[in-house]
Amino acid sequence: MSVHPTAVVDSRAEIDSAAEIGPYAVIEGPVKISAGCRVMAHAYLNGRTEIGPGCEIHPFAVLGHLPQDLGWKDGGTGLKVGRGNIFREGSSVHRATRPGASTLIGDDNYFMGYSHVGHDGVIGDRVIVANGALLAGHVTVDDGAFISGNVVIHQFCRIGRLVMIGGQARVGKDIPPFMMLEGDSCVRGINVVGLRRAGFDPESRRRIKEAYRILYRSGLNVSHALEKIAAAGLEPEGPELIEFVRGSKRGICRHRSSPRDSRNDPSG
Image (cartoon, rainbow, N blue to C red; front, side, top):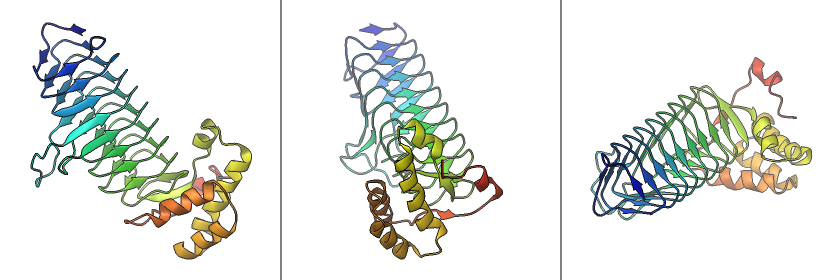
């Protein structure tokens, strides 16, 4: 274990012998840090925080600090981070508020500078959260989503798998999987580039395009659109979208056409 002499490490902390703690880092409380982790200068880890193998925690990142919730009372809450995550400078992830619960971060995620994940958040795998993006409490983000810079996401919102959110967007409702969102909670089309990069073949993209068309461009209300998607036999992507929408408590983001739609044709 390499611990810089200027680092402050709590006696209750459990740090693997293959971890590295940089200068002036502060590890406060029963923090657990796994093998291959690198905690860089001036980073701050607090409370019942567990960091999985191979994570990078850059200068001035804050993990596991107190939730920003006026009603919070410490009931053994924590933060659990999977393997291979990168937390760039000034990023922050807060512990949960519910007694015995933890904010959950999956594997291989990238949190860019000054991004924030609020209390009780659940982040899947291979999610990218760009600079300055702000996720309020209880936000859920599924695998492979991309959240661009300075996006703000309202508490309790759900972001579906492989969603792409454009820069400075405001998200107030749930975003179904595979969608691309811009502006004020407006779905513009499907995330063609993200789907290609994730290995979706042309037939899979066709099924997603058809499900999108039925949900957002057919003029049907949501219930009838879901029935039509179910009848269209768009497996396996159609049922995934149906399950997400039916599980929504906040409702889903609306669709709005714009001149950009012609340049982002979801047929790709």
